[in-house]
Length: 329
Ligand code: NDP
Ligand code: MG
Image 1 (cartoon, rainbow, N blue to C red):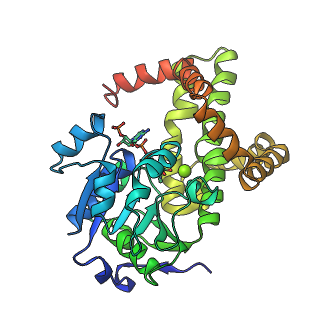
Image 2: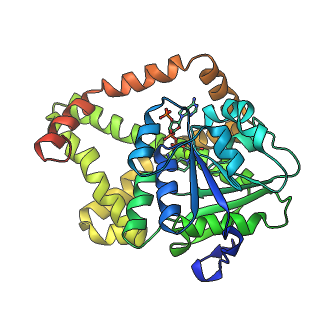
């Protein structure tokens, strides 16, 4: 069984009088900085001068400084810029400040697990990985709840590495939901697999292909959008709240029967084989190698794929429908 911590089991005295440096102020950086500040933690935000988020951080009442200065001031230093940006920010600035006794913290294990960042021996290397996009984490915190998080220790130089990670997780609000102890390896590999096979990639392809099949057969695109995309949220909310069985109990008997007999024909053993291949590429490092090479070469293919996605018919129809219903401006 995994070890799960809640607020009452977490001793956060290790952060008393300490400073936490948040480097990056995007999805995770902003939410984490605001939650920790509201929890009474002394937070310094480190950014690249002139970037978009410098102003955003100022508007939220922070006084941003460079990555280097923040890393010098922080006892715990959080790397919260995109994974592909972290190695150069680390090498050029953060590494200069990584004196013994400090802790270096990540929200995802990619760069440590695949060896792109190699911190010195004297620092703690820890992880607090909230299992949620930043905006949702902030919303939950403001509503008095929190999102679950994973914590891990890669290097325990101070003997207090786990304590530090748990204290940060508590300050983020995650101790209200549950903090699960794991390893860098398990977090990195399962996170990459999950986002590729199910959460982002798998769901995206199910929606795209469902929309294509319906519209090619002559059904109106608006109807197809509602059937294969919009309603997905309601179904996922049911699963989130009450499990797969809870979802089935809330839909019609016809939907139960059709879902449980046709579902396995659509997503069949062949898909499972493909999932195993994806997991293998994550575990043997070939996915990481390919993504790092793409990023270093200027991310041209990456931009093309995003543009292709924006150009899909379902995206145009979706925007119209969401505007009509007031969901999108
Ligand atoms: P974002 O893309 O939202 O980060 C944007 C921030 O990074 C901005 O402050 C931006 O500054 C800065 N930044 C972007 N490029 C560079 C660069 N080349 N050099 C320096 N700063 C840069 O990141 P996320 O919050 O999505 O991800 C941060 C970490 O959290 C990653 O490790 C990710 O895997 C992990 N994570 C993310 C989750 C999510 O929901 N997004 C969930 C759990 C973990 P500027 O304004 O100057 O461009
Ligand atoms: Mg991820």
